[in-house]
Amino acid sequence: MVEQSLLSITNQVSDSSTRVLSKGFTDWIFNCHGFWHNVVLLVASFLFVLYLALQARNSFLKLTNGRSYIIISYYVSLWLVSLLNLAWCFSQAWECSAGKELTWNLLSLFTSSGMLFLEVSLLAFLLQGNNASGVEALTRTFGISGIIVGFDVLLKAIYLFAFGVPLFIDTDYSTPRVKWNLWVIHKLLLTGVYGLILFMYHSRWRERLPARPAFYNYVIIMFILNAIALFACGLTGNGAGFAFWFYRITVVCYHAFYLPLLYITFLADFFQEEDFHMENVYYSEMKDAGFFESDWE
Image 1 (cartoon, helix red, strand yellow):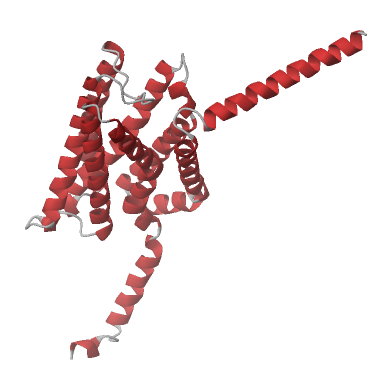
Image 2 (tube, one colour):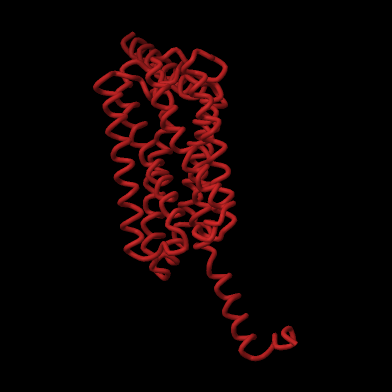
């Protein structure tokens, strides 16, 4: 009799635990913003971190041989922010969970600030042009980025913890208008900077920017993304519910694809530089041997 009672209690506990785990998994994947929203974030962020991990050994060897302070610092920063972003993507259920507001806001603040730091650093690098190299450029680039991002963190922290504005809780669009006004200013500044760089690419100041098509394509993509987010925030702040979904799409695209885009734009060529370097060496040796003299005749 006692054994049957213990067995019954054990089965009830097991069934209860299974239901709790099943409900937790369901809430984690399907609830809050929906299945596709969460899956895109989870899969994209996980695959990028997995790619970084698989390439870590080769990347480390090239970093130690290259001895570029800017690339090393940016690569380390990219790793830290990618892990933060992965944690943010895996914690989507917190946004819709009672009692998790503080934890979610802190995680979102650190994650968004880390990504903004990388974004501003790359902009600072672009605006320094072809002379951006060495420790001095690294100090200048990270110094400017640190000041801008520090001010951004302070402003968002005041909104979050002093005024109680739910900046990072987007379960619906019926949030205080002051929140959307802040995001409009935020997106307007970024859109303006990217627009300025695009203007420079088509003006007589073009030579001041790095002559790499990847940077130009990066600027176009980020200009379009921030312009869409700007209009979405502006319309949402004025009560247009459909614009809220456009805003959420830009958030998903930013957290899912921005870090891979940044890697392709700024770091991928460096880690594949060996093949290009060897081609240049072979070309120089052949030119010195006189193989191309007939081209000048």
